[in-house]
Image (cartoon, rainbow, N blue to C red; front, side):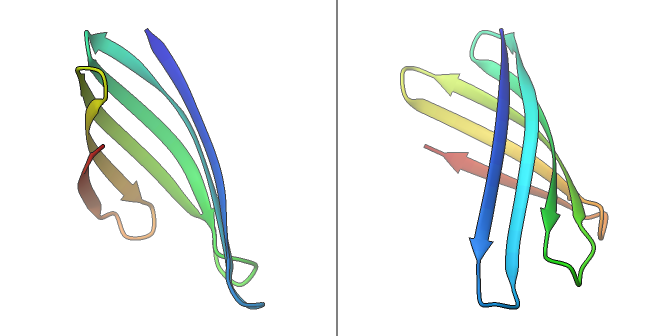
Length: 89
């Protein structure tokens, strides 16, 4: 099974600072209830700053009707750091 995801968000600040970003990606269910997702996006901090590329890979496990565990790893091209986060919902 496959899935496709897309997101666009704008954070409106004062007149000097608005942030927007988008991401698009897809996922593949490699075994029952286990997914691998890959997303690409950009963060735009406005005219005075460079756009930041965002690459994300996630492995998620779905159990039962409404429980899902996500392990996400993100890399921003600005500093080559690797972050991990987990979400329960």
